[in-house]
Image (spheres, one colour):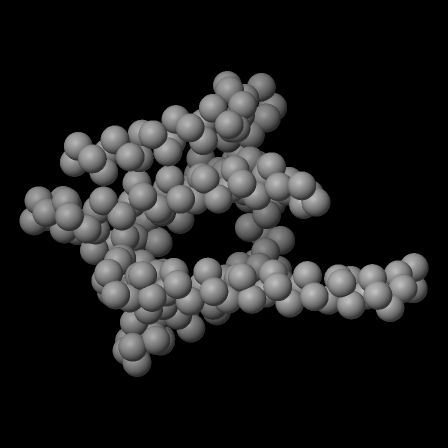
Length: 193
């Protein structure tokens, strides 16, 4: 952020921009946490209610969350002054189902999804605190050391590619088209279901 090429005035402006960005991020995080906690929103609970007791009330949050995420992603990608790079996430046809199964087991043992666990930690739930520590240690375990190298190698030999490229919706239509389709589709899902 600071450079010898900038004057003191420019450094003050850059610092002010950084403080504003952190303040906005803090406000977004606090409001998101408040909405999750007050609404008792948990993706695990939403799917459980929908599939087991046929109550779709909580599951309406899923298309709403998708629509908000897509809209936010699009806004970030077109904002001037930001270099927003979106690369498709590479995924492995071997590790994706294995990871999904392990994630599902972990969600059941933790008693909720990551969002649910986080707001329950804020409420003082010790079981959720242990689950949150498990999230953090699991990410650290996979991101560092020899495990990361083994994981990257195994992932590289089992990537899902189409024409030597990671599949992406942008290969079929521009991002703006997909943004409109997903937001409208999410609104229709919420309205009709």
